[in-house]
Image (cartoon, rainbow, N blue to C red; front, side, top):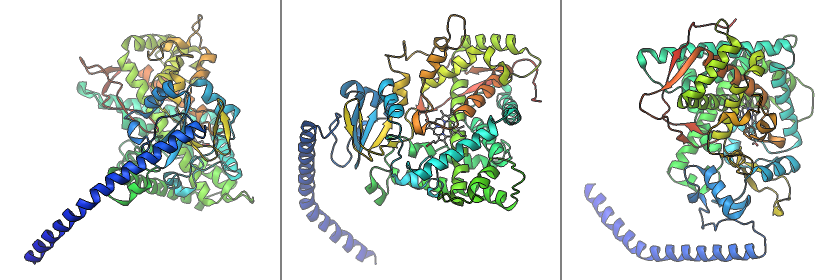
Length: 524
Ligand code: HEM
């Protein structure tokens, strides 16, 4: 047996040697041929104006290797060379990249329908069993689906004073719990990374809204699920290679493993949602809407309509809302805490303000918001400066469209670089400096014209539908954490702004300590 193996090995290697003698020149010749063909086509299309401006795309990979660690920064750099609308190629897909405030608003607002599509990416179809609203293409059915999701959010957060109060109380309960956990993790002068506790807190607010149930920070299964979901944004963020190089799925490599993990985490997360929604179906009472799941079951499962929405879409909607509301909110809060610890002089100013407006005997509430303009300014500057959703979820064109004098064909993938809007030197003075006071006018009030210029929730037909609840949630978490704690970095160590790229930019290696300021207060 051993001998046969050896013979086979010898034979095999001599065949390979012979073969590689012929294959290597053939490979090189093919590559040169492909390169020349690509170059000729590129020059011809550019001359005939069939192609938008943009860097030369290499055969097979296109510009994938040029994106670097932070694609949004690369996109902004390329815009300086090729203009705010240009084309790149990622693997087999042409992608148009939009940059800068003027062009992006023109596209998303003036041409809202033309830019409202989503690409037919395989990764998008893996989300919520293909029944997600967020990752579906523009259609009559999608419009209906989005309307249902939007009105459900409104019904449970801002429809009337009672729902508003109930929503706020959920957040207060979660924020006071978070304070306790932070203090525990900071015991004996320890520093900790707040990322995971923030995700659990944000997920709990959404689970309370959708299922009427929250989970403990120590719930091992829930933590494990959220840890997996944390990686979701790596695959659906602009520049991910999973969808543009299908041939990478045919042999083992990191992109294939990433896609497999993505499919697994989607299955696990969607399974969790499906179970919960099913429990709701079994105890559904049309006279009593307990939470968002009941409301969505009522309008999709039980409705007698021909809009094409099925039970799968009910599960998909719940999954959309929970998924969208945990990574974004927790990342926003993570950056806020990091920047508070990094800028102690700003933190002191905020502490003085909150003590003056709220006092030390009660927790801050939404009613205090108008008197805490500097706190809102700090939040807007965090959104602008970090642009933690740097590029929106990829869009696609629903018909031919002309933008900035350039024609974009139907079904083209479009990346919208929000970071470039928030760092556009035509809009912002010293965009690379973190300065919350830029949002305050002479009287110290929030300048609404300026805050409207920050782009983090996108715009147009695909604008985030959770923007209002996100703002309330971030305000209350931030105000309560600040009222109760001071945040410190490790002595002699500067907090770095290094982050990982994906749909959201997440701080890396952030270690802080929380100290109680005065008495520990509970919500009502
Ligand atoms: C700070 C928090 C948040 C930020 C920065 C944010 C940002 C975004 C962005 C950039 C998009 C993509 C828009 C596009 O593709 O052009 C989006 C979509 C979406 N967001 Fe948010 N989001 C936040 C919180 C939330 C919350 C709390 C919810 C729901 C409870 C939510 C629900 C959604 C949904 C359903 C979509 C898909 C919209 C569509 O495709 O039509 N988001 N969000």
